Length: 295
Image (cartoon, rainbow, N blue to C red; front, side, top):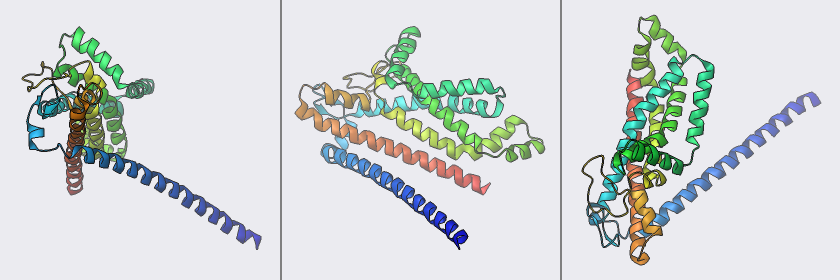
């Protein structure tokens, strides 16, 4: 009789432990969601009062105590696009090389270790490096180009790792089948592997865009202007940016009663921009998934 009871008790203990673990995970997930909801509700409550069409489409005035945030919106978009143009192709090609071409295990481990270390470097260090390299050494000055390249370096490790992991998830049988049909390695990667990995690669690109859009320290030393009530005309111009604009309003104001509502409105606009960009990126990811299923 004991031989039959013991397995049953063991199964009950395992099931109980599993339910407890899942319960803890659910509780932690709910707590995280609640924290996010509270933060969003706070910012919406504080910033919705100043959010209108004039606030989005006009220039700042009176030393940033009035007017709108159009230059900061345009500057943020320029920096995001510039950083993406630099980081996405280089990061994806690096991920392809590490997973598809590199054969020396020591080299791969070294590159992966350096990539992980680069991902853990504080953003202010990237800002100082960007100032030393792009602003001073290459002579780009405080400009959109310097800020974009610095933000691109910041996003590069995340793009590389997510691309590599997305390619690893593709079974080798697809590569072998393509090569057996006479396709070259490059044709196999371009027409078989990349389309299958693209939905997961898009996830990494979304995360990197989110990080680029909210960084203050890298652009503090490379391109951001305190008060610039005009739009940039070239990539060698300075620009305002929403994260830095928000930082200045909240910490260096001369009339906090007038500037804090603008700061909350700026934070709300930044959140809405990131949300819209994430929605567009998610739409593209779903599009690639459906296209892959059809093929």
